[in-house]
Image (cartoon, rainbow, N blue to C red; front, side, top):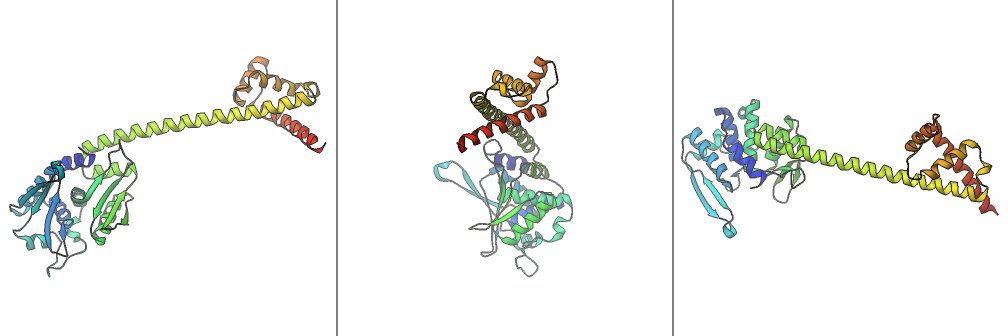
Length: 312
């Protein structure tokens, strides 16, 4: 069972007050109505969603809608068709899909979504008919609504963004897609439509993935630091060997000789680790900054020796 199906099953068992139920049914009908053919055929592959829609029509309008189904290829799933014939014109006007002149309304009337509960219910209805959300365990974070008409897509986007969900819209070959990419915002949407079990699952996976990603970043950072320290140490040893070969350690002062001795003794240590070792073994404080200053002097001497070799 997909994560989308789990969410739809969960929220399909929930009903609210009459005004919220009306807002939800408005979203369901609006996103099923074909304004070109003027037909209302609600299609879903989810039997729980089908039963939920049936109950909404029964409760609000006291009608029995007709349900048909057929098996998909290889009989893997069924496609359910919900046909509304009774009181169709009245229902379409009541739900704000058509106006009094029987003309299509590009946006639902504001009286259907006057409060937060009704807005949440409307978004629930849109999700039931057009929504999908990736399983956070197997995919990138992504929630989308596939909507036929531009004005409805813009309306859904604006409604989502009233809840600060940072949704966006793009044009597809057929219709429009309203989508959310941020994991935290997807979790917030699931809360908005009261998918409590879905939220717990989603957040558990999100926390696990975030922790895993953070651990990987720390490990990568640590590895990068080790590689950087090794590269720095190798360059320092290269400078030291050049100085020993060309002029000998005796040409340097005691402080530089000391740092040369310890670098050759501990070639794989970082600058910070080397300063700590030298402080303990020499019994006098040598800071990382002071150590770095000595290595800069060694590098300058080595570079002069290289220049002298070039000029000869």
